[in-house]
Image 1 (spheres, one colour):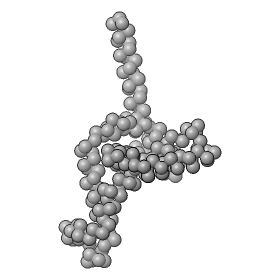
Image 2 (image 1 turned 90 degrees about the vertical axis):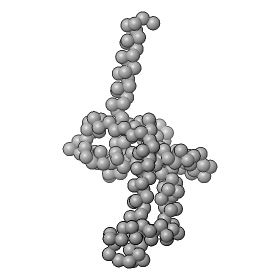
Image 3 (image 1 turned 60 degrees about the horizontal axis):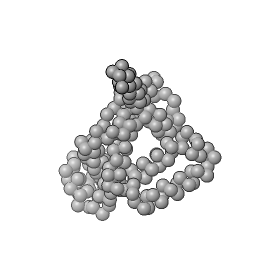
Length: 198
């Protein structure tokens, strides 16, 4: 191959990479989040809103990245290989295929299936990492209450509902922190700015 052809090939590959990455809002552990996927999820969870300020998109992207990190953690634990999980996903897909508006030919089909797959994984991992640690764990809740006593006006029993919520948030915060230390997260703010509409 001549030097000119090599240079042209490299330039085309570089251009392809630039165009492909420019259409992604972020990547989590090397897996891209496309602008299309992100905006589909954003609109779905914001009553079909068609315009959003940059800050709103950035805040939501942060939440979406946290979601993706939890999914990666679930896969790392092999939860996607679980027989019950596979059966649930298969059942949902079969039901989805029977609906006219969501056949595999529909452009939203892949987004819907992916959202369900990842949503179930996120739910299952959250059960292990957060919810199961709160159930029947009075000692941990009391220790958390004592550590944060000044936040509560009432005693432990009267504040228990709020203590559970706060403890859940604390566990999740620590979990996300550990995931961000473990996996690489990159945000393409230039692409996010292009998507923003004041």
